[in-house]
Amino acid sequence: MGVKVTTSGSFKNVEAFLGRVKSRSYLRMLGPKYGPMGVAALSGATPADSGITSSSWYFEIVDKPGYYSIHWLNSHLEDPGKIPVAVLIQYGHATGNGAYIQGRDYINPAMKPIFDQMAADMWKEVTK
Image (cartoon, rainbow, N blue to C red):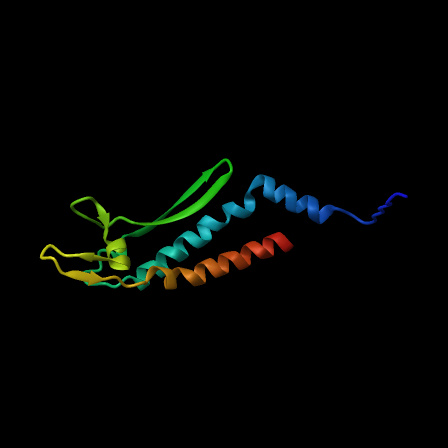
């Protein structure tokens, strides 16, 4: 006894999707859209004493074979060690006189709506 499979219609949608996957066009639309959105969200959410950290957010796109990523970075660094001040605000830090400044989780709440929208857009791309 065998199994018989028949099909009718077209694989046009599947072929179009696989073409987009191969060309990575669906990924390349992410950076220009979500990079600036993330920068704006992070800048607006950063606690601002002087405003330097808030205005120091930027993004970079890493696009290489088998890997695509958007990195949100902050260029305001604290010596010694060139530690990003945004990280010190997020996770807390010790001061020069031995005190401890408690961290404030501002990055995750700022980026959650961006990631949610990115996931929704990617799902639309997969299912269209």
